[in-house]
Image (cartoon, rainbow, N blue to C red; front, top):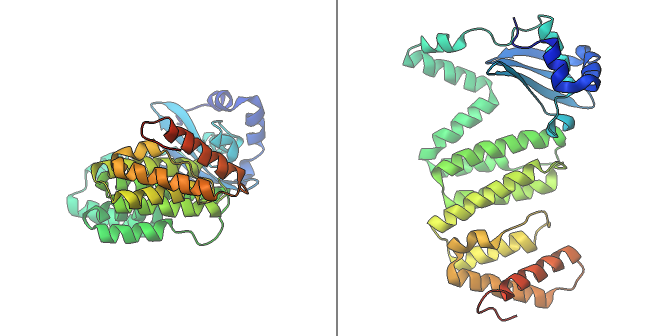
Length: 297
């Protein structure tokens, strides 16, 4: 017996998406039970990954399609839900928690390693956690995980953003400045190779920058080096990154802020106006510094 009804599906999706989803049943592939729900792949304009979850008895639908990315319960979720109601899956009803609790430590280790060897996502998560004790190994793993080698579309961007979130979760535990700096650089490089129309990866860049700013405040790098790095990222790149210098004041200190000011002034002097967006950025930075004490425009 499932934790939801056809009325629940219709209520979540609305009449239009429900009617469309009812026509997508034959497009559902790889419907599987998982803990607390089901997962499936649905073919449409692209191939979308769907997961329906039981959250305290309520139906929660997740899909990698653009409509679901906007917060809607989409037709792909409806199609999967209708198949579950037809008995194609039981919604993860088996008591796997009870089974796992019955295993001893050695059996648990063997089971986890076996599944990690078959599941790249689980393997990556465990590798990142294992790397917390070996920063050199962790940095190499991050480099291999986040470096892109060609353009990826919408689905690939979502998958890549998931990798970035996992990497940042581990990086937040170790708070190593050089590691966080490299993560920012790799993800910023990736922005030129992804379809990020929904800003998913841009959000991860901002999270990475915030973590790096925190790490710099705790253990400041060489101020002038940090200042020049921030200016290159904000002003000399593709224009897709917004850096808040104020977030880095703890790491920059007086010497670093002076270097930022000098760098902005020099770039302003050399600016040829060919990139209006960059020119406006420079103007805003100069105006911001001009409003502070001891700034000479």
